[in-house]
Length: 403
Image (cartoon, rainbow, N blue to C red; front, top):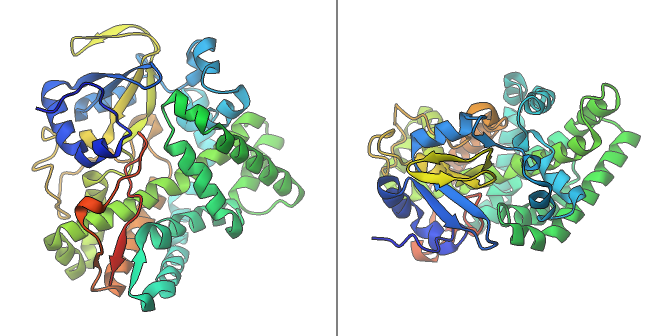
């Protein structure tokens, strides 16, 4: 049996064996105490029903970092940089959460997402046009990253020349999330990211447009519904969340299909299966490994364990999405799966606002790849494929293919 001692959720070794580990944890230790590298006390939850409880229970769990003691809060990094990553809806409790979400939700209405379909298809085709004659590509760098970053940048008004700067800053944060020591190491990137967002706000105030940043500035300046800190933090969230999940959905989804040729043939033979297919890919290789953190509001006992106030709670979305009590044959990829209430985008009030956009991007990206590149295959061994480090996300570092 796997040893739970010194389990490092961010290591490549864990990522490689995660689903076997999750299986053992669901059976034997559904709430596992974890010793974080920085000494922080944390717990990992791996069952589906428990994940639902945590994500919906605002009495025992909080998203708000500032509900911790001032000492805990200030120990992570200076307030300005901490505000940048925490003064947005994903890190807020009610009633602030509802106020912040209502402002941003206008940009993600069903009609606006539908109106973006042709542009997403154009970007997808353009990216494939660039590499089709080469006969090979690195999926993450050449396709999975550029597609969503171009889409969200167009929505926000971010210049194309800045895309790879944003990628570096975002990756530095994602790979350090939920670890205080690593967050301190990522401080220069977070600080630079903050300065960049300040410059975007200044520029858009001088030259407002129809983009999302201009809309958020108006919400702050004219109606006072966003504080200055919330404005910067919300823009930060939209940039990071607007591409990270979709990069992983495209990369992970293609890997799953290439690893399961029967499901790949099904997808290619019946385009209508792309819709349930995307849902199954989201479940099978969840783009978000661990839900953004909760903290215990007070002491309580759960699964026979004594959880203390301010303990960190990790919600294993990837683990919950393979729970056999919820999903029949959970380790089997089945793009025709009927009962599929996965939690790839979370649950409760913090359910991902951009989920419809990510689904649309993933569906167009994968369907177009499979249609236009019929001989697509992995150009490396499964052992050589490496998952990104960091607790939060599940995504490949590199993914070479030929076609």
